[in-house]
Amino acid sequence: MGLAKTEMFTDQQNEIALFAKAFGHPARVAILQHLFKINTCVCGDLVNEIGLAQPTISQHLKELKHLGLIKGNVEGTSVCYCINTENWSTMKQVMHAFLDQDLNTPTCC
Amino acid sequence: MGLAKTEMFTDQQNEIALFAKAFGHPARVAILQHLFKINTCVCGDLVNEIGLAQPTISQHLKELKHLGLIKGNVEGTSVCYCINTENWSTMKQVMHAFLDQDLNTPTCC
DNA sequence: AATATTAATCGTAATATTGCAATGAACAAA
DNA sequence: TTTGTTCATTGCAATATTACGATTAATATT
Image (tube, rainbow over the protein chains, first blue to last red):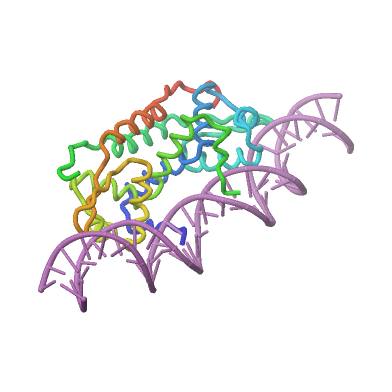
């Protein structure tokens, strides 16, 4: 079907999956790393930096903004995108709680 | 196109995206959480636990195994799946390096 | 051997994602 | 006002993902 049956999972599981899906494409990873590095950015820089077409970058930015991981402020003709630090911290807590589960040595394998 | 242009990104960016994609579906999140909880498992338990059909669970398990995040050992008619602790630790390092980038307050937004 | 159990695989349908050309909207500069 | 710049949106085409019924493969059980 191609459609995740979200209703059968917990809110926490769906939230982890949503954040993870945002990082599930190397272009979005590259965009976020670049935003971290230069600490202030516009879309045009990213088009040059990443190497995908402008509409493609714009679409990835839209997804990241929709999730709240980045902010976008209009500045004249350009738009300034940057990391949404508060939401990034919240996301980190959610992901850490999942990744840092106790690693007891399994009893069977 | 629906095809990620992996060749234009770094190995690190592609690796982060691959791991993240594995967590990008709540069923796989639920499977991993269950494996962490009971510390030894067979597929049949997961079918009851998660609520998706057996072929669907089997497919998700195959992806997680292919990525190396879980191990599967045949035990008679059933298969024992559990977390691959070594690879899980490696994955954690990769994801932490990405998630824990310095959060300098942006200069523009 | 015949039957049951367990999980993988195959085939297929439905939906989602990715990418970009073309276009549009908003503003700045001439 | 015309032109240029920057980024969003639209409308596709190509590919990927998710889900499951049907089947198969492998092993137990009787």
